[in-house]
Image (cartoon, rainbow, N blue to C red; front, side, top):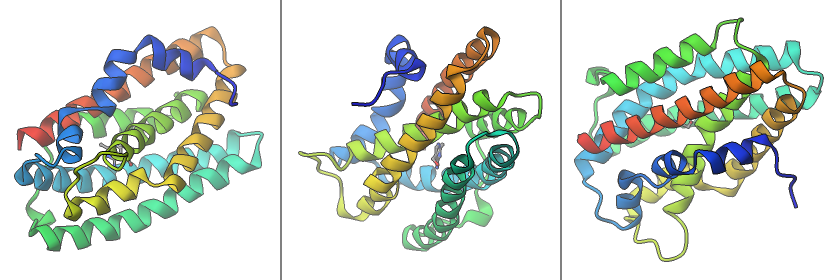
Amino acid sequence: MEKRGVIDTWIDKHRSIYTAATRHAFVVSIRDGSVDLSSFRTWLGQDYLFVRGFVPFVASVLIRAGKESGESSDMEVVLGGMASLNDEIEWFKREASKWDVDFSTVVPQKANQEYTRFLEALMSSDVKYSVIMTAFWAIEAVYQESFAHCLEDGNKTPVELTGACHRWGNDGFKQYCSSVKNIAGRCLENASGEALAEAEDVFVRVIEHEVAFWEMSRGG
Ligand SMILES: Cc1ncc(CO)c(N)n1
């Protein structure tokens, strides 16, 4: 059994918003097959833009893992995440031609802009390593839990959407999220009360941005 840490207590404490992010109506509609394909296309274009903004964020996490972590494995975990982002961008481009979405004309919507701005603020050197790691974990975990749900028993996920679900819902990605969670948890064990409060706040804000991102996608 894995040890329950502060992150698990936050998930419990903020359960309703956490569930709103990981079982959003958009995700549930993928799982039950009722998804509106124009929503999926909106999500695809917006998430491609998001991921392009997420790369520099992960790069900043990588630099900090190299400099500030006492554990050499932190950098390797984040580097693995970087490598999968490289594949992800290629995947998005293949999906774009499959769904006839032209990324060059996609304009970031408000929820996307606000999320990207939030990530940019987290890249400041004033933000503590434990806080940035908590954010990084939460961002990845929402996608992992959401898309894994679309692959669980009883799903009616349309076959043309299973590629997206496997991308974030596969066991390797789950393992990777668990490694990031362990890093964040370890940092938080030694964190000051102030850092803990900041990390909890950032956790909730990530979840809120994720909910808004799904809402935007569903809105078409
Ligand atoms: C909005 C959003 N959150 C998380 C991820 C996971 O990388 C993603 N691709 N997009």
